[in-house]
Image (tube, rainbow, N blue to C red; front, side, top):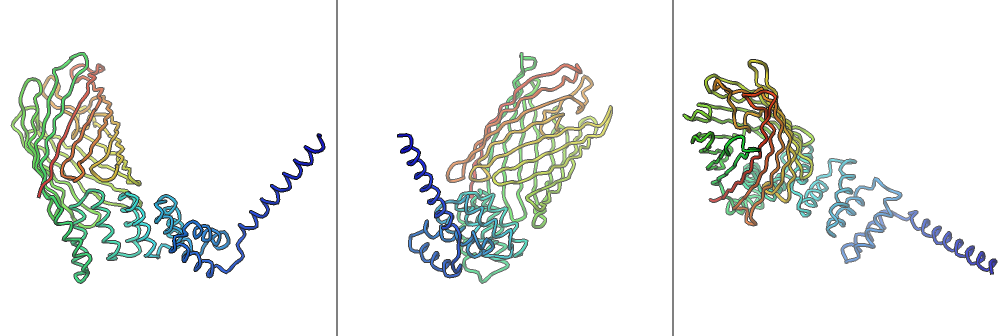
Length: 423
């Protein structure tokens, strides 16, 4: 009985080893790669996609640098909605030979079909390094911007394409189609409330009414800010500009006025933003505030786009007595399907002059040298037609009391925003 079991086990092991050997032999490719490639293409176009992919992968076991084969394999994955695997194969092709324009286009389309417009934008930036001002890549750039929700920028991009290639009918048609869908104007309203722990202070209320318009030179926004703090009503009037200077370079210019004591009588800001390789962006600028004295704040940021995520760190440096104030905020933003649908989480330290509700000491002097920590959360989303957008935020603060160093306020800031676009 035992001998029969041993004999049966021996036979089973031999069968498994033989099967595995046959399987291994099948994995060794010894045919004509061109002939097999031609046959695989015919199978792929005749509905036998899986068999075609097996043949293409078999060729690559012996000819891994046969880029036409790998490119076609990537395309079949993309057709089957296997966008992740297609992304891997296209990356191998373009890393080996970045001067294959058709593969840049196919890789970008793969990301657009996968509803990853930010990944598509990253690929387009890289592709334009090798094919500067290429009409096909620029049109895809406009498409990725449109799909990410930035229709105004898409219109600017496709307008530049039409200017460069006036005979291109496809670009002209796409420009007209975007123009019909564009909303150059928007009106927004926001409200926030600061709620202090243990009711150490009365709740503070903030609201903003704003109007924005997109122009070919950049966006312009007018704001009316209102706050009720310390049982007083305060108003401030602002204008913000984001002028485009050239590709990859734009600016921020701002000015604000108020006759309320809890806002600066005059504030201004200026900053330059520059795109860098590897999807980085840096900025450098300043802010000015005029209360009883003038204060100049120097600021800068470094941001990084990776896939549908965005990381940014901003720092503020405020010289003055009794010493230089330093603060910073690190924020992570995760986009969903476009630029208007995302959530954020951020961490900060010190008083950040553009974000905080400016505090004053017993001499009514605005101060920035406070020990402060904060966490901010936010969720923003839009309607299907992209005409309406909402946002909700919750920020948590631990802030040193200006009149009692070493003691802290704990408070929560809750906010809601609404924005509507129109022609």
